[in-house]
Length: 330
Ligand code: GLU
Image (cartoon, rainbow, N blue to C red):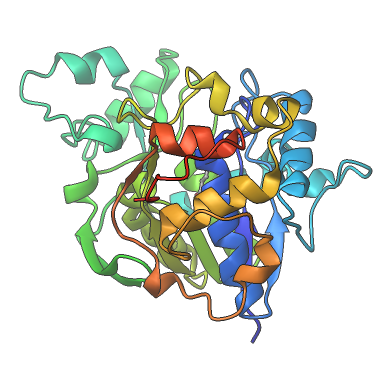
């Protein structure tokens, strides 16, 4: 069966070099295995997502010399590949989990949870949920619902350990308890969570390979739990290290000068961008202009760096087409 990967950007801002690094590595992995690549717009957050960013993302991906086989294009909309058009599928999945007793209503607000003195913070995984509403009696639930109290839907952990062979980081194992406990699948305002949507999409779209930043690793056990509960096949995962700004911080909107749009309008060559990313990933041993297709042969996720890469001033100069003769590229 051929490999099926995906590019799954959130169109909530301009894409930056960090997004380009994830796109490049996901693309290289699929192309090196003669697989197919799906483009899926993760616009669950209707308030922050915009069609302008979607167009920009597609132009950015093409500008980098990358492509995809299935999904919308700048010329043609394909709503089925936008999460905002897939809410009915998330609702069906949630209903199925409810029927299996694997979803329960939770009446705790964020504020309630924050106020729990002993709620440990789990970094990216947020606040650990202490299970407050996990075993509420049916009549209590009924009474609260009738009073119109807002509630979210949480996944009921079965205490399983989820293990997988990460294509970059090696063997991983986690329980949901280690990743924040019973997690949210639908907020009280009806918005489906990233965890539910992404698992249902990966499952229904037949995605067999997921390549994404290691910052999402704490979510993987949650997604495996949903896929397992829905009887959907699990993809292979590859969590790549992060590209950090010169300030050592994860690239974000405040690094506006590193947005692909900014680089493009400054006439930075996309082959310099790819060359820098390939160098940072350890695919080439010095910065040089390179087209992504020239990196496909022999590409293996198992061989890319596991360390985060902090951009340097030399990298910035390289992008601008300035390099010092004496600079050693290290
Ligand atoms: N939409 C997420 C992002 O743009 C990616 C989620 C995923 O790959 O699972 O970072």
